[in-house]
Image 1 (tube, rainbow, N blue to C red):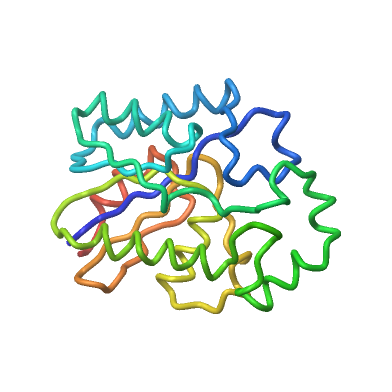
Image 2 (image 1 turned 30 degrees about the horizontal axis):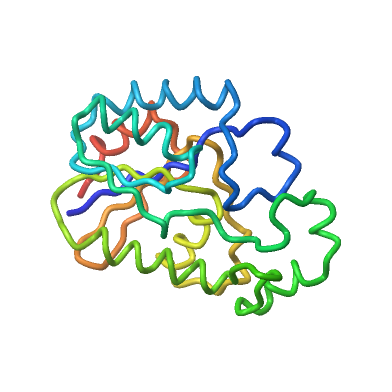
Length: 206
């Protein structure tokens, strides 16, 4: 059975938090860096076979540290990036929320921000990553990615309509734990702290 432990990156620098940063390569805050290091320390006790990361620095920082600590291969994948907001990238959230197009894309997942990526496109990326990563069974992979990607991934896993995309809230440096038997997923936990990951895996019935 393949196990995936998927983390959203840590807190970003304060100057970016009120904006749609999407695929901007923004820095972690000092707290985000400290918390990332703490998560790496905790995960170092797990038996990990591979690490996968978005190329954006906020996800790549803990992924690189964990790879070095565990001497485990790190696979950097573009399909793990956050959603591409196009011309909305860098704009204030309140400004984007005032654009009717932002909300229309939840009713029609083919709608894209100007120059950006639709929710359907994001779901397609998430689905492609899942098909790639569950090809090998019997080991544990750790993934560092982004909140939007994880929401899209959960829609894919549960075969949900895209209008439910925003029903998921994934917190910084909290994990989604999935186990796969073939293509069938078992959701072991959401928003799991690094400290609780090991207990959840050890307490599994499967």
